[in-house]
Length: 228
View (tube, one colour):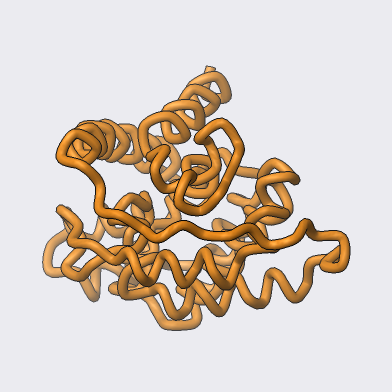
């Protein structure tokens, strides 16, 4: 049953979080599904093939994570929320409650996980255009309804900290993951990027509705997987 729900979640993220104009501006010709898929593999990672890498890392490094969080958090409720979000792979809480190297590890797992498990043609598109796509993300930093600072890709990413305050660390993780890719010479030629344009009011309203639904679903999975 849970596997079925996770599959529906993946379809939901790709449909709701993706915005066709981002794919168009990047020259990503994958049926307007590239950015949604990219975000899916880098956002809430429960159910992903590489999720166990993250939970194993946390359990090894922090055998008493709940107790550690209780010492740092202002309330027990805040500690419980942080625990669930950290296990879910929300990098804002990892940065806020743990150490810098833990954010690095999370981004390493996510970047490598995307490259190893996302559709191969989409991964090759990203790797062939990575420097310019990441530059695009930096150029399209926009205010976010949760993040205290602007977020790349017009504020669309589910893990908003990864493309906001954590963006420099994320770029390092992507760079390292690309360097370890086994067939760089076989990548397609880079595509030309179009000039980014701000989203229309209709696109913004549609995203905000989808974002709230995505947050509700993310909270559900955090509750399910957080009770370890």
